[in-house]
Length: 310
Ligand SMILES: [Ca+2]
Image (cartoon, rainbow, N blue to C red; front, side):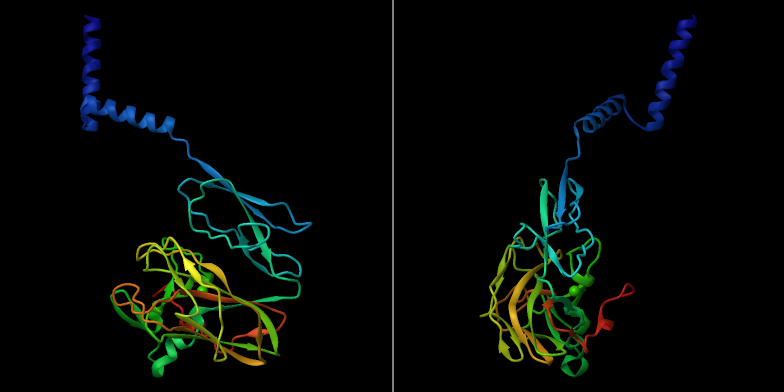
């Protein structure tokens, strides 16, 4: 009699629990098996990214563990007495810059690249080019998107956590896909000097890859064309996501005159990229100058970038 009561109580109790969970016994069992199987066999893979400072007497390298599925983002830029930091490279010789913004497949070492002693770094953000909002009698530059046009501030893109592209200053300029579009930087040198100039670029629309080069995309310094090595963007994603930016050599040992040096980045072609984007152009993040001279940009317009409230 006692056992019978106990059995009945147990049955009632299990039924109540199952009812509360709104599950059939088989469902509960199968979901339990599934989740325990997932937990036991699922080990999150981690890979190590090592930042080698790459000079004699440098502090020990920093290593960061990156979990599978996580996107690699750089640590804060290192500093070194008397040398400007140029970026992280794939090898100790600094032959090519390392691009962040992807998953890390295996343990990797990257190497700091430093400018020569005595060269100062000056960064000119593309989003500060005053022509963006001042061209066309104050209406701003005309740009092309895949589905029409835009003007002025519409050419500036702001980076977000979801749309991270390793952009300097969190903004860049795109929609330069209008034949004749001319993005102008006016950099002032206190005295005549030379500079090594890098351009931080990326691409969109033309998947999976495209190339900009002197014949189709003109870059001029004080009216004279600068010849640069062709830049090919690979793994360009579908519209709406960004290929992370990377530094490319524009020109080394360039002579800058005392006073204003005008750089024109001109979409000098009518190669259709997508939809109504009728000219081929890169997305431009910034120019980086390494020079013994003192450089500035008196007309830069930081006020035109897109703020948090817009
Ligand atoms: Ca920028």
